[in-house]
Structure formats: C-alpha cells, structure tokens
Image 1 (cartoon, one colour):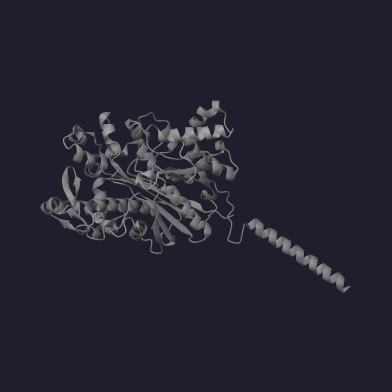
Image 2: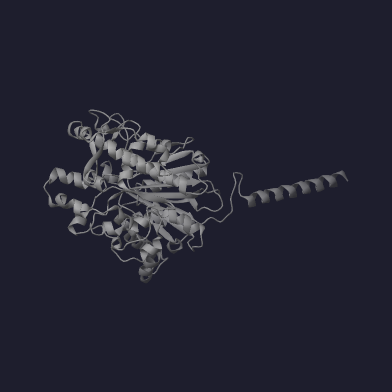
Length: 516
C-alpha cells in the first residue's frame, strides 16, 4: 500500500502586545463590563518586551530552535529561564509587532488597512531588507496622517492599530451595516491571513524539496470564518493565502472543527494524496486575535507576565512517498464518533485504543503522543493544569485497561513518554501538529523514535449546535525507504514478472510436448 509522507513543517509567532490590549477578547470584554478595573489600569505593566518573548524557552521550542527534550529539562515556570536563540529558526520565526502590522497591509487587497505615514516608511525600510518580503514593499500603499486615522476610529467604527501606545494604523469596515464585514471581523480575518501567509512562506523557504508550483491544493484549518451576511463563514481563506504565497497551481478550501481542525486537515490532506487526487497538499492555519491575553486576568493576579502575547501560525506539506520522509498511516486513524461517549476513558479509547487495534500495536509501542500541546506556563496559573501531561496519564490508563501496562508502571510511562507542552493557547494551534516539525527530524535522523500518534480534540459545544465532543487521530512512522509505485510495490512487480515468466515457460514446454 502506498502511503503519503510529511514533507516539512513551519511555525511562526508574531509578537502582538498592543493587539492583546485592544483586540484580545478578555480585555475587550473587561472594557465593557468593568472599564475601571485594576486589571485594565495595570495591564501595560505586565506585558513582555520582544526580547523577553524571544528568550522564552517555549517560544524557541515552538519555532523549533530548541528541541523538546531540552525544554523538558527546564524547571517550571519555564519562562523564567532565559533561552538562547534568536528571531529565526530553520522552520520559522518570531516576528516583531511593527513588521506584523506591515504584513497586514501587504495581505490586504481591498484597501482596508491604512498606516500612519511615518510609521509606514519605517516598515517599508525594514521590509526592504527582508528577503521574504522585499518584493512586497510596494503593497504597503495606503498611508494617512495620524489625524485622519483617529477620525476613522472616532467616527467610522474603524479598528485601531497601536504601537508603543500610539495609533499607527487602522482597519476599516468593509460594509456599513453588515456585521460580518465589520472592522472588528476584518481585523480578525486579516490577522489570520497574515499569520498564515507568514507560516506558508516559511514552509516554502525553509523546507527542502518543496516548490510552490508543485502544490496543488491548500487546506486552511484555523478557527476564523470569512464571509458576508449571505454566507457567514463561507470561506475561502486557503485560496487567499495561496495567492499571497505564489501557489499559482493550487486550489483550496477551509476545514473547521474548533481545536481539532489541524489533525482533521492532516488526515484529509493525506487521504487526498493517498487517493492520487493531488500530489502535494499544504495545510496552513493562522492565529487568533481573540485569544491574545485569554488567561490574562489569571496571570495578572499571580503577578506574572501575560504570556499569551503572540499570534501563532503553522503550515505543513503532505506529499507522495519519497523514501525518507515520515509516513502518514492513512489506514490507521482514530475518530470520536457520535456514539463514542464523552468520558475521558471513552474519548481516549476511541482516539488511541481503536487505531492501535487496527495497527496491531500496543500503547507502549507509540514513542510520542502529541495531543494538546499547550504551554503549562500559561494553563496552570489559570487552573487548567498541565494539559499534555494530563492527556498522557489518560493514555497510560488506557494501556493499563488493555493490560499492556502494569498500574505500577504508569508513572514511569508518563516520565519516559512525556513531552512538555510548548504551544501558545491559540485554540487550534496546540492540537497535535506542533510536533510535526520534530517528527520529521526524529524520524529522519539518528533518533530511536519509530512512530508517533497525532491527536486533535475539539469542543463542538462552543458553537451552540451540539453538546458533542470531537476528535481524530493518525499514526506517523519512520519511512522504511521502500518507495511503492502506482502499479504496486517493487517486490510485487518482481513476483508478477517471475510468475508470468514461469507460466510462459510451462506453456512452451506443454506446447512442445503436444507437437511431439
């Protein structure tokens, strides 16, 4: 059976402290309900500088500058330990906020983003020195005075873009009365698009053997919805991002499944390649402004910095078997069905136990479980605990129930198999796929890791349409090096040739005997 492979992955962060203040849902809600709160008054004092964001070990792990095994050795809270590593990595970057505003202008094709004149010149000068964006400088064309920008905010319901406490730009509404095209929604969507473009461009630049013209389809799997009053959430963010990244031969569509969407998209992309529908499928997801500072009040109350200060993005490519890249086992997937049940045991049985049964594997035979990779520095102060570790304990419990682990071995299982969480809490971003970049390294290098399970879980009740839980999973494993072709494996072909030759010889011998 021919399986698709993981060809590469990219991860990006865009430092966005001013967006945290003005666009994060926790802060905007607080301004409505308690405008004079101490939290809002002191918010600025708990924000991190760009240099502090760069030095966060979890952030350096997210962009693959630091290996997760190194992160595991750092005591919590890990943000208090300063990590080495700069803006760029072999799979992405951490972009400063000023440049991210410039990127918003670059990806805007409907003249909705305006930057203050002098600020725009600063951004253009920086972009002119950036290999990835130097050809986009001319797209930063809508500039106005500070007074004009302020008037748009005060009188035209525009969303302000702030930098160092000053108004440096706006995002205008795209329709006077359609709330789906309000400035608030347009800002959310443009941020999603910009961070997705940043990630996909890094995938193209930083990965070997990946060419833009070879990608035939794009799946976008964030949590944002684009559309107007007649088709809220109609899409297509995928094609919008593909256009900005030079994917001239690609079509695309959006997949939405709350937090679990990236793993759904991984399976969909792999299935399309497996079926031969497309030879190469890119998956991309931008980040969310709403989730900036989502747990900010909890962090503030514990006198710690607001760690949810960056918009995240991810991109990866699924292609045909090349004999070296990690194989995606489309025949071994798990799914939480309508009838699976919502208890932790039922969920993990559906997502972990059932696919292991298909593969004839035990729980200990999976080297890495990448489930919900949220950074515990963020979640523990908010009362949500260490999410990756909690999931691994539940998986270990499934192993005990399956009699593949002794109960006394459970702690060792967690210690040995555990991978620390390093992803920002940007909804869908932590769900399974943060490990894909490391999976490529682990399964193409000298590591002993042979296989991993990627698990995406989602909370469908958030849409108020169902109380159901959701989730899917898939196994990724080291490539054996045997590349199968459309006509079957090379071994099978040789067998067929041998059998045909044998049959022909037998026929010739029988024919000769009859003549005699």
